[in-house]
Every structure is written in structure tokens, then in C-alpha cells.
Length: 248
Image (cartoon, rainbow, N blue to C red; front, side, top):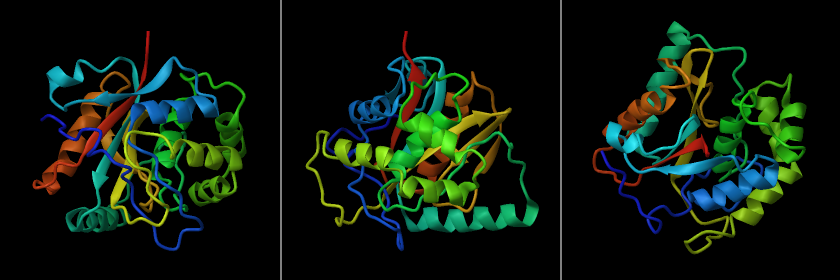
């Protein structure tokens, strides 16, 4: 399966949450913009966002290794919402195992899902990513001991990250929308933690454990879940996948 969305299609896609405390201009799904954002927050340039051009093995082989996180941008649809409700109901009924080492936070700010997704990717890999002193490191230090809701609340008032989002949201290859423009795409991130593959979505009630994975197989296993998102909306082509990967 080849991802066909080009830069013009990959416009500033995210999902506008109701009852959020603030509405931001969304980040563009553009590795250049995302990398400037991460570097501004203290992520070393050894690590960066790269395009995943397709989900078949030969296409995945082009992605630099190691991969620390996989981020999916997808259209919000009725099929997605129905699956989300069913999935959450089943987990509440049957339960699931969630590692105590997993970093997860709620999204309280409209159009901040790109920022939340990038934070999720970095926060769950601080053993690999040596953060310099900066806004990301400070945020993660202050977020220790907080629950998912508390971390979401912390981000609301964390000016260093919010201001970086606002600055980089003005960049990219598409026309900058206003914060009030309706958008219906959403970012989520997949990470490996303690032997399991987790889907981290600040809109959901909790992280989703998708079963076993390893650091080496994260990209391939996350790609399988991305394919499931696509299969639920077979008429849609507006999907984008990127990875947080190390460069030589």
C-alpha cells in the first residue's frame, strides 16, 4: 500500500476538539516543520521526523533505523468514531495491561494533536533521545507524577511549547488557515514500551495496547495498525504516516 497524499493534500490536518481551552492553528504534516518544532524544544538533530511513503515491506525498508515512534494522520469519520466507541467499551469491560513506564497525556487544546503526538513520541524514548536543556525537558520533568489529565492541563499553560507550536504553525507548504477554520484530521502516535505496542491518542479515554512488539519491529507492527485505520475507510486516501527516526 502506497501513501498517495502529497504536500498539497497533506494540509494542516488535525481534529478540532469541542470544549477545549484554546484553539490553535494546526501544525502541518510536514517533516521539515515538525523537525524545526522538535529542535526548538531541545530534541537533538540526530533524531527527526521522516516520511513513510508506503506500508509494504519494501517501502518500510527505506525508513532509517532505529525508529522510536510512528505517527499517523487520518481523517475523522463516522467509521472511526464507531470503532473508537466500541474499542473503548470492550477495554472497559475486559481490561488491558498498560505499562507503568508509559507516558500518556490528554489533549485539551483544539488543533494541538500534532504537538501532543510529537510529545508522546519523544517522552516515551528519553532513554534513547538525549534532550538538551529546553522546553521539552522541562515539561517532562514537571509532568512526572501527574496523571494523563494533569499532563494535558500542564501543557495548556506551558508557554514554551505552545509558543513554538504557534510559530511553526505559520510555516509549511500550504496556505496558513485561521485557528477557527474547520479541520477534521487527527494525529496519533505509536510507541514500543516494555514489550507492547501502544496507540497514544489524547482524544481517547486511555492508551490502547495493541499487543506484543519490540524496538526493532515497531515500524512494521505499527504499520499493521495503520492499515486497519485505512481499511475502515476504504474510500479515503488522505492518510499520512511519518516516523521519528535516528539519522547517521
